[in-house]
Amino acid sequence: MTDIKKRPSWDKYFMKIATLVAERSTCRRHHVGAVIVRDKRILTTGYNGAPSGVKDCLELGCLRDEKNIKSGERHEICRAIHAEQNAIIQAGLHGVTIEGSTIYCTHPPCILCAKMLANAKVKRYVTAGEYPDEEAKKLMKEVGIEFVKVDKPETKINVLE
Image (cartoon, rainbow, N blue to C red; front, side, top):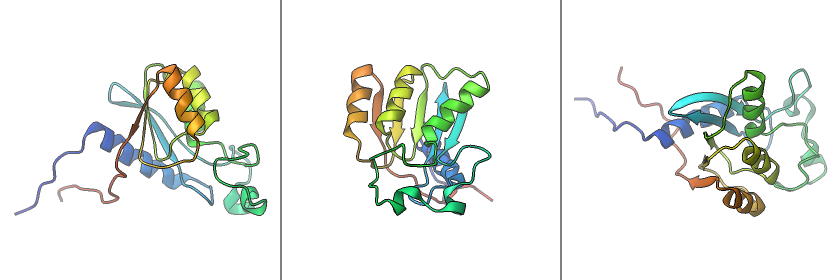
């Protein structure tokens, strides 16, 4: 008899999808994926990497590593656009409002992403990761973005054959 697993909660489901989106990342330090959802529907996705049409860190190497810059510092010294930023940009490109949405992201936001999410009127941020930017968490609390930390999703895909 097959062991039937319980269906994942919506938070676990969308976090697992964010983890899959992260596989497209071209960053040598962190593979980050984001999924923006409203009413249990995926609106956009994004992953961290260089802008379209530009050589990425997999091809050129990491500027931040070359300059010994710690994670969470000097965001401007990087070719990559963050996963949250790419998800927001995709919404703008395709005319999709993300107001009132939830973003699922494999890592917590930096302060720059937190500012963008605040102005986009995102209501909830769900993550399974760690990131050293306490200012981002303070800003999200101030503007009313709920911050939720969940367990990292299992990487196994559970389906019946």
